[in-house]
Length: 430
Ligand SMILES: CC(=O)N[C@H]1[C@@H](OP(=O)(O)OP(=O)(O)OC[C@H]2O[C@@H](n3ccc(=O)[nH]c3=O)[C@H](O)[C@@H]2O)O[C@H](CO)[C@@H](O)[C@@H]1O
Ligand SMILES: C=C(OP(=O)(O)O)C(=O)O
Image 1 (cartoon, rainbow, N blue to C red):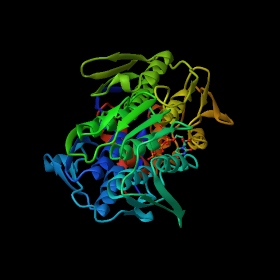
Image 2 (image 1 turned 135 degrees about the horizontal axis):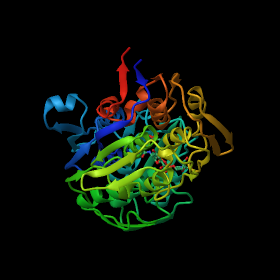
Image 3 (image 1 turned 120 degrees about the vertical axis):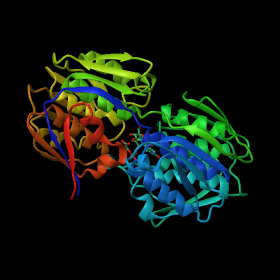
């Protein structure tokens, strides 16, 4: 199993290109199931989750082809990919494929809307909480689906071959359920109004894609989304937005180690709350035509309290990285997680590097230390893994991060991007 070896202590300087967002690419790829035409997606990141979803879609009959130079593809660069679901050959998404990744469950929306039936295994994904699917099921039922859960599978069908538009008020904000209901309602009969919908940039990217395919959607990016269902959708060409979590992660790495890095292609509007917090810690953030420039002069990190919440607030997917950074702040900070009930698995691993963190319910109290010392650590999920990388970059001596497959789910060419800015970091295979 691959490991990442880091020798900490170097400042970061240079340019890091920001890749397409994993969490935007996945729902856009799934939207290809809604049409028998070709959906072309630009800037699709080369990640394990994307490859896994290609396999899942392939099982339903989706063909894909990659544009661009072959050698670049092999190096793991973002690509333009054509998806074509001309014939759906299977409406079942089996456990073996779906259990590896949360987003694969989302095929239930387009399959049901286009084919009138779907059988989808309950999902997997990062082990950060129980992650139920009740909102998906309730929302689809409101659109007229008949559902049954049996043997770990959700069996869904429509009454007369088509879903029917309706009003659904989410009792809790859910990114995934908003994606699914927006896709399903695009092909439903009549109007659907989704209230208390998620407002994340990935929702807006999906709505742009569906609109380009001929859907009639208003209000994406606000809490109320209105969808007028159409009979059929067509192909389109859509670009995946830059990854705001990758952007925030590297920004925090620079703020922690010190240095001066241009995050090329990053968009500040996608993570303003996190950038505001970084400024409070003492980092200098400048938006330019090229991207976001992050500078820190080595004067240390000021402690800042954060609470995660749905967009536009501080994202849960940056909580672990921010905690990594706060371990070396000049004082105490409080980090409260409100989205997932079990997303503090990085705490005990950060402690191996010398961090002082105590947990009180959903709040971590981080008492900054003057220095961290390298150690072997083990990541338990995607963002937890990268928080250990950040801490390792700032720690004295050698850190080895095990279970790198978590990182490969969501970070394209991580070692290459960081070593290009002066970090001592390498992958050790086997
Ligand atoms: C692939 C992808 O895009 N994953 C992101 C997506 O996950 P995901 O879409 O799974 O996250 P949700 O927004 O749905 O989850 C938010 C909260 O709602 C709960 N919930 C959700 C659905 C449901 O039916 N019932 C229910 O109770 C969840 O357990 C969680 O406590 O948004 C999360 C919140 O920004 C991010 O951390 C994930 O990186
Ligand atoms: C939690 C994440 O992914 P998933 O929802 O696929 O588990 C993530 O991207 O941080």
